[in-house]
Amino acid sequence: MRLMADMYLNQKHGYPDISPEASLNLAELWLNRLMKQGDADAACQLGIHWRRRAVQTSGPEKQQLLGKAKEALQMAAKAGNPVAIKLLEEEASNNKSGLLDERQFKPLLQSYVAARQNMDMGHLSGFFARELDYQYIKGKKATHDAVMEDIREGWDNWKNRQCTYIAGGRKDNRIELIYRFHYISAQNKVIQGYAKEKWTLDAEGKIMHWREQIFKKSMPSLSPGFK
Image (cartoon, rainbow, N blue to C red):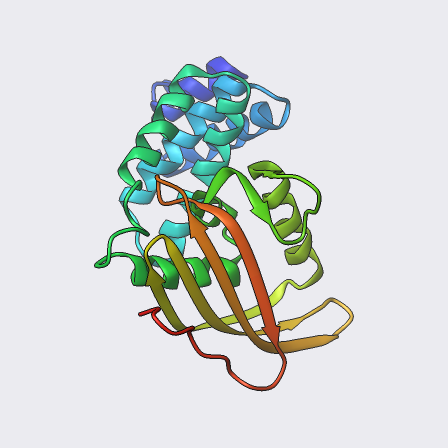
């Protein structure tokens, strides 16, 4: 299966009647099966492929492909794949100063809220440090994987989601973010209101301390000094 995936990914299968698009779709199918079986090399190859596809697209499709690529590379890196580890380290280095940069942090906050709405774990995960003090995991520093799992469980319960960015502010290495939310469960239960998240960033601009407050009726404001 791996050999076939390589042939179709590189369009060297020898079947002229198969279009390039169909060839890539078959390669993705086989690599995805191998990744789900725990094949780290296939996961890395698929992550690289999705990254390349994302360059050729835009909008929600681009974000979806980048999210899938990141999840695949994270799986490969966790299994020790050296290429995936290097790619993720380079990405982290490139994104190092984003939230700490006065010119960049507000667009990044808007993309964070969009990731919350679209359940884009690949993008959202890049905001968090490897270990952090996280409000909903008590007793010790939570691992990055544990935080992502907690977020994913919330998404599973509230899949119909609307999130709207309201305001964001920074003061030294601390950030406050306010957004409006409206969630509907599979049982048609509705929750809505405003979330105010408070972050403390580490030296790399990743969240190392995360808290949120929920306001069911009145819209909160940024604390004094945050702008």
